[in-house]
Image (cartoon, rainbow, N blue to C red; front, side, top):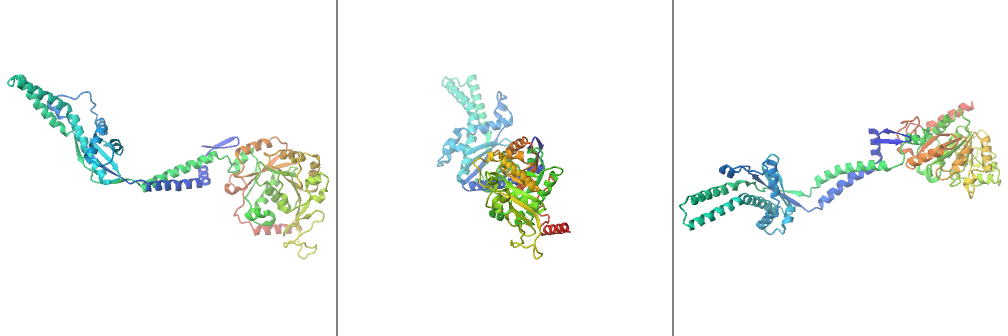
Length: 558
């Protein structure tokens, strides 16, 4: 088995197989529980059947030939073949009819009896074992005993049939000679001698098959819930594992960051972002604003740091955040990243240019003019920008002009020393505004280019929330107006084919792609596997980190 990724593949290891088993454990557990349960339930609904057996000994001696000094020819004398031949002889309908006539009242036909019975040969022994299965244990025992007995009778008749025919012929000839008055002739004497020989041969042939063991016990062969349950468990394990790997082979969704990197041409992983909590999702909150000291917020600080590394020695001040398809978390990522950069003391401009499905206004609770109205000249850029001052407490939202700071209670503070909060950074948000009739044409206009240029001059970094690449061409058009691109990919949403097409699209743009971010990384490999970045889960961050930020701010002020 080989695992493909990008343009190359690697042989699967035991660890890969165990990951598949862990991911598809519910398929395996379902098969392990369901198949034995079905087997046991089916067994409990089966009719009870009982089986009895009898054994017949086959004789390998032919005393008639020894008496006459003759040798059998034309017949194989191989013991196993002789036994199998006799087993086949025992299956003729004539014997079945005789068995049913002897027992009587069974209600079975000859074919039904043969279907409910069998004859097997023993290994390295001249023994035939007769089996009969019936719902009545007493009847099964009677039938198998009659079966074995009728076979021996039928075998005796077959073995002595030619002798009896010869004896009848000799007797007829003797009677003819006696009626003609030739009793004293030598011919009559020879026929009398032959008559005695044939009678002796007939007597010796009676011992070629004999019953050596009658049915002394009856065993229940159906149902067997315990046995069927064990077999069902083994089958369930095999079936579950097989279905798990089949499902894995048919599932084209990517499962780890390394595969995403390979599909995107070796792009660096900037961060793994977990899914926001239920409360944050329900209230459209940002973890960097509402829970800035939490473990989840640390992943965005990590993204901020890694973004600083990849833009080192580069003049990258306008960055577009996009994805392959929708529902990959790009808007949440870019909004939290903007807050994280502002908390680091930078002046950040955040622009919502996803004019198909704008969402940033919900995160910051902004209603009012946006980028489309600025481009049309209906409002000035200064009036459309909403400033979010990042302080040690909570962050306010107000129109640009005079930026005020607020405390933890959300009320404005004065500029005095009583309870005032120091501004850590400033985030300016420009929402989309009314959606234009043709967003694809709007993002290519000169007016939008001028807006982005003005924002680039007034801010340290400009972050743009762009539409998905594979759905519309807006992101490709915007790529010519930015300095760098960051791709957001979501586990269990993006597929290998999507990543291949995304890589092909990004290869055509002149703007450098800085890296990618993985969201919904709950099933990803543990921290640091294959990369130098990870979640930071459980590492011990929390309030101590929040206090370290205070210490860093104090050192800056000194």
